[in-house]
Length: 190
Image 1 (cartoon, one colour):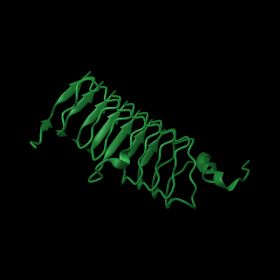
Image 2 (image 1 turned 120 degrees about the vertical axis):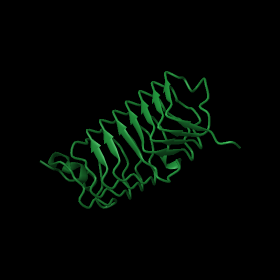
Image 3 (image 1 turned 180 degrees about the vertical axis):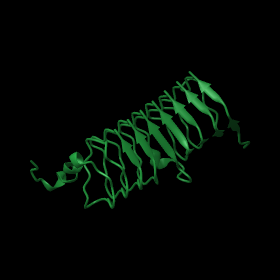
């Protein structure tokens, strides 16, 4: 099968639920105000691509490669990033809604989440070493056997992290958020 390459392309206001996104490798491409909701993106590669004002909710991303991909003001509900191609997996999120998504077992060192909603997101067994959660809502997000070394939670809120079940060496928390580390101990803090 012939492999297709797409370089330096801009896709604007396209409904890929109606028009299929061709299989291939996308390098340095921009997707702006596109609808990819529920679209089969399996086995595609996105290198140094930007997604702006796009809806990728419930897209299928098995063996999809995201390498230096950035998402700005995107809706990414229910995505299973753990099924992606993990070789050089690298993403960044700004002003995104990622509720109900899963990063199960992903290696996400130094990943930036800025002004994102991450409600009920699965971070089980994820490596978030030196990741930054800047002004992110982590309500009911699941951290279990997660590597959080040197991770920045200073401006994050609504998280609950059990220090006994996660690696939190040199993790950065604001004083106001320290109570979120003690929730599982059923103690009263005044």
